[in-house]
Length: 353
Length: 168
Image 1 (cartoon, helix red, strand yellow):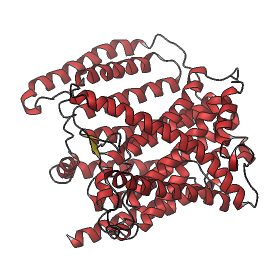
Image 2 (tube, rainbow over the protein chains, first blue to last red):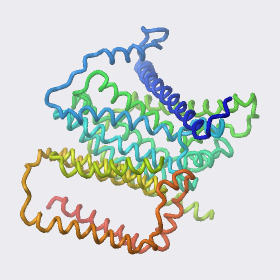
Image 3 (cartoon, helix red, strand yellow):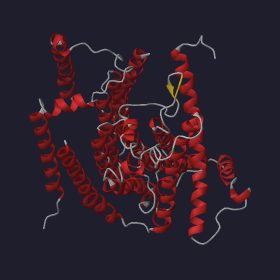
Image 4 (cartoon, each protein chain N blue to C red):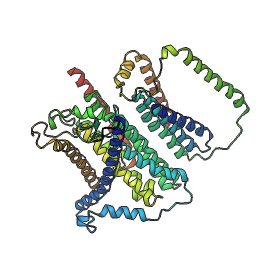
């Protein structure tokens, strides 16, 4: 240990390390979520899915990545060049930044720096919501700058859909915030970690209505089935990314899966107790310090993985909505339900004092 | 470091505002406005007003400007013609802008004691939790202006519904 380093230098170096590790792990998760989706979808449709590259097709993401890197990068003549190049960067950037405020494990301090969260922000929840709302620009601009009617239609659909469902999504989280009395993600997790599974917001907090509103709105926000109208291939070729090729297409693709991971993280943090164990204090603290530090991370990853599997399951099960059904579902059903949830939750909390 | 943040994002806000005026395509202007709002949000944050910063990003950049961009895309607005501007605009515009600038500076300078001193970046380090204070203020002392504003917005929504409704 070199004690000649100042506190600030330690903080800086450890922060850079955290950012690098989290970024690499997130990108690897994105790559392997694609494989997970193809495998699970395959099994649900009674076929094998990718199985040729490596054992059980485990090397498929690497080969896919190499393929996308080596493909010819076509640049259509009629596009608005600066915005066409900027759009995938916005989409992927926003998708990756929001992981920065997610706490992955219990508070574990190494030389004063919390190792399992990049930035502990007082308004962590609002930061995630804000970054998600900025991510719309990636889709909107890609469709507009492509100068292609299918792309434009896809991005118009997507923008309208995301703006509409953002309201229901934001309102569904208010109940959780009321219970935790904070927007800090660590505090929200701590408010549910007292008695394991019984004190999770979805069970003990009676926020299951909010949870279902959140999941439906989040599926619409990430443009996933059954709300994947922006890229409805039977109507719009491929929607907003029709004109993109090679790595620029891959950036949209990665942004979609990174957003799925973020949604899984937020649902875990807000409704399923984050990194806390589902058994509470029933299981004695076995192992040393290191096991106790890693175990919460294991619970967190397991929960996020369950949400990713749910995403894929829903995609394999449900057909796509019609556009007017989508809008009336969002505005006439989810939004009033979210407001009713807020009123009931605050009423109960006020009665309890 | 906090002064550096202030200088960088202040310059970014100014540059975005100028770019907003000089760009000829409406979508570029709208995006410059987004840059201005995001830099303002960072400035709010560096002053310790983190809730205001988040609200600025979510409401202005994430909702209102998205609708601006949406409308520009939907109407497929083309590039503007470069004109020299009307005569009246140059006669009234420059003195008007100067007058507003002078008035605002006068008010801020004369009410300096009441407004208090802003500590640039001073509240960034210790992570003040001011959401409770903001809501306390909004729902007790500022309740009437708050409710009147929400009624104003409701009236605007009703007006939009009336305009958009089809005639039977």
